[in-house]
Image 1 (cartoon, helix red, strand yellow):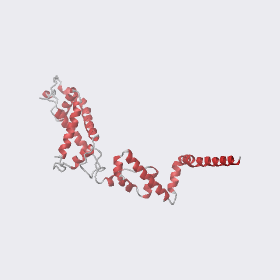
Image 2 (cartoon, rainbow, N blue to C red):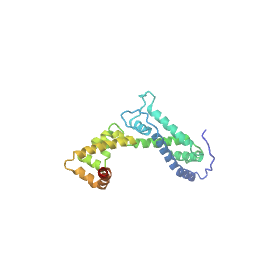
Image 3 (cartoon, one colour):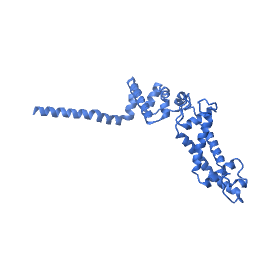
Image 4 (spheres, rainbow, N blue to C red):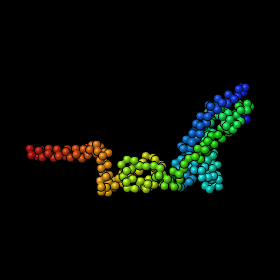
Length: 260
């Protein structure tokens, strides 16, 4: 027997409209909470050719490319296992909601199905109806994602969608190397951690220095000077000129001391 809350159904149409207005943003928040929960879970690693970052990526991939119902990985139906994870996440989220919110959600989900306007249905709380509504919306969101960025062809797709700015971006573009560089580091770009960003940055710096050394017409050096002239002046002053002057003063003092 589902939980019951006694309500006056004499004016049930207004009650349904009010309940739906309250429940709609709550349902959308449940959907986003479910997606966020999957995004915070580590990927299982079922699809080796796919650069998944978390369970949400993996769920979307299996939904769009599946169903995987043949026990290919030795753990039963992969698609069904993912649905069980989703059901658990949604159940945990529903446990946090007060009873009146559950009632409003039940009315709203039944209204979607065309059943809420029957007075005998208004007082019932149905977790199954709410769970089904959340699942439907999560699946819809998962099915609409563009997964080319994490798929096997990501090395070709990502360089067409992103660009590199700054002096190094201009230098690589001038050399016709932007796409090749992005393709080489595409998985680190996807990971996006501090270490990944540092590795990519050092690789870019090394290539930029190489390009500067190969810059026969001086265009790269000219662009570097134009953009960072004040910084270059300050750096040369601090790291080279002032130490040179201090060394000269030291030599002179030493010579004066020796001569006295």
